[in-house]
Length: 148
Length: 148
DNA sequence: TACAATTAATTTGTATACAAATTAAAGGTG
DNA sequence: CACCTTTAATTTGTATACAAATTAATTGTA
Image (cartoon, rainbow over the protein chains, first blue to last red):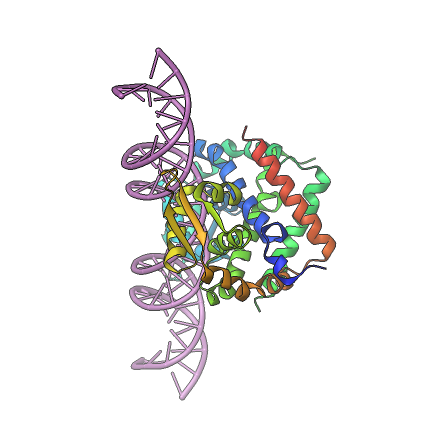
């Protein structure tokens, strides 16, 4: 039986390894992403646009769980790099229409090899990966639900 | 059979949910940690000191996988709050001796309830938690190993 | 149709994160 | 013992993150 105070030990924490994993994985991506002039968060946003050509700040944020105040400067950077365009909507001036460019679409070709390379580093069996995947989404759903 | 380009879809990413989980969990901690005047990273560092009263920047960084350039300002903040002391070593002037204070030790009492509250939000069965835990450390070890 | 309420994005402020450069101290070697 | 190398921490620069405040536009309603 675990004492309440033992739960504060790092080795008994479940969140700590998740935090570490996220950081180390992001760090691992860096050299590959540098070759295509992206950071990890920018890569996530580009993946979003490789599936959905046009969107707006709010919808991006809802999918990627990113605050608009994080997205605003990030999208400006992607615009400067020529991967997306940002145009204030004429129908509803509150919205910003964000759209992938041809250059942005072409970037997908260069990024193609990254998932496999990363998968090799993470080096989980197919079964382990599936288990991890579903557990992560379970935690996500539970944590989000507990917000209500 | 998955096409190479399908691996770039967000729903096929294993790293993306880890990234999301880490962020959302950190966000979930915030209100509880605010009550004891800590951020999540500061909390991690305090957990470290609840197990090891005295250390230095390098050793903290090695355990928590934090760069010294992240730790320097963070430790100064913890010092300002009175939870630790920072004293340049007299034996080896390159080292900074970082030590928990009485106030820092007392903080543990206030933090005691946090792990259980967080566990309730995450809401995994014992078995799931163990599986997740070991998978996270497996990924961590694999990713670190791939750095050599 | 004025105007209050709502909504979307931006700005501001604070706190990570890490790479690269710098500083300062200690160790190793001819 | 001078000097080169190594090591530990700090500083600098860039990029997230998010809360709270602000701005600008639209919507709902009396």
